[in-house]
Image (cartoon, rainbow, N blue to C red):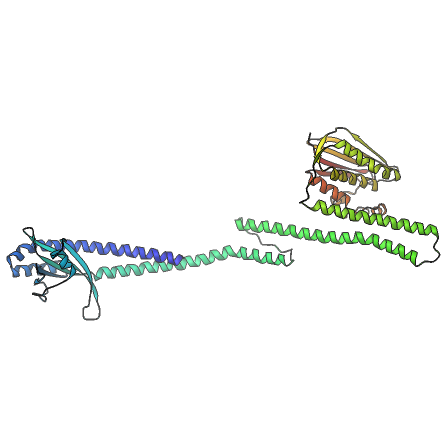
Length: 455
């Protein structure tokens, strides 16, 4: 494309240059021909051959080239080279001025000099007018090869310049395209590697160009994909472990009953009670996983309704009060500021119950748990406060992770799966809220669920 453009430009330049130079020469020599024809008019009319020859020879020496004088019939009367005298010439340029309406004419011819080196010439004709009548014509044959040579030299220079420019531009295009395509090719290579499962791949980012911004965005995406894949692997591993543990416990208990003879009824009941607890635990883990799968889905639509938050808290506390009572824990709730919020009631209730259930599991017998509803700026704040074992400071940042439990032995004894807090936070985020935790080891914890209030 670039070469074609330069070729077109070169052709246009040379065409106009040649047209200008030739036009300049033609106008000048046609003017000289007219002057000679005016001088020849009285001598052709009087038939003064000597004076016509002298004038033709003088003009030939003055202007260069060859001058011929022709009568009305196109017969040469005078030739400055003394060769064509008496011969009839039938060039178009002669017919134009002797027979046609034109006073002047010219034409281009390639002349063979007999030495194998042809040259270009121009035949100029001008009518010889005497007493308003055309009585003959002057033919001026002039060499124009110098203009042709000059034009060729100019064309050669322009072609060389264009060729050099094409080479330079081609080289620049190769360098620039390589500079541009290198990060694109690297991006393609890394993308292909990631598609094969190598999620740790990254692109080197240099500079602040648009490609650098694209590479940085791609690296961010790759990092998120790697984190998601890592979390998926951890989730599968943890879920498998959580499902396998109760199954293994049940298998051991059942085998103990199967392969022992004469087992006392009390032991049967104890083993069956343990199996029942493991089934409950397994059911809890499966329910948690199903809930987690739903809350992880960004496409899941919330069923939003305007509800009185105090009623939702009352139902949550009432549902868990028997469980707290069995553990010897006092569960109470108070409403400092009641309000209406627009939310998915079932999900918000599940989040609140998860917070209360978590507090029950980590509060000893004789402890207390209080649930409080109050305003906090543009949010409704539901606080669950306990005086249980508390959370070590180093553990706080991990407590919302999936399957994370501070005291695994204690959680296993109380049936915890490590999904309750994670699900509660997911529900809060789905509603545009959050969960805040404050805890002191050995003194208790306060979990606060913030939800945007409607009125």
